Amino acid sequence: MIRRISSGGEFEAKVGYCRAVVAGGFVHVAGTVGQGGDVVAQCKSALDIIAAALAEAGSSFSDVVRVNYYVPDRAEFEPCWPLLAQTFGEAPPAATMIECGLIDPKYRIEIEVTALASPQNEVQV
Image 1 (tube, rainbow, N blue to C red):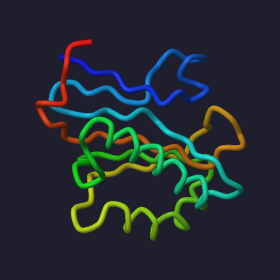
Image 2: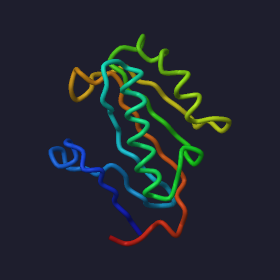
Image 3: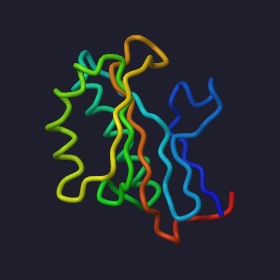
């Protein structure tokens, strides 16, 4: 049983992916970038996009079990920590941060999550 969730983002059609896939008891949310003038604004925007995908899948940040952060400059990651700690609350997921190039130099952070899915939210598509 697979359910695909599209957010209509510009890279979904260009690259050939969807924002999230509900399968195997999990919601797999693709790497997500956000808009904004600095890394914190982009982080907040990316989290908002992820929250919407999780909600459409019947999940939330409290269901996230794994998060990967991708940043082109590791020095820019620390300013995001308070927002991330607030987002994931008392039950933080396992996490990894990787310093790497992103799809466009204007992006300062990309976030990818895996969350538990409710069995009733998986449907064959």
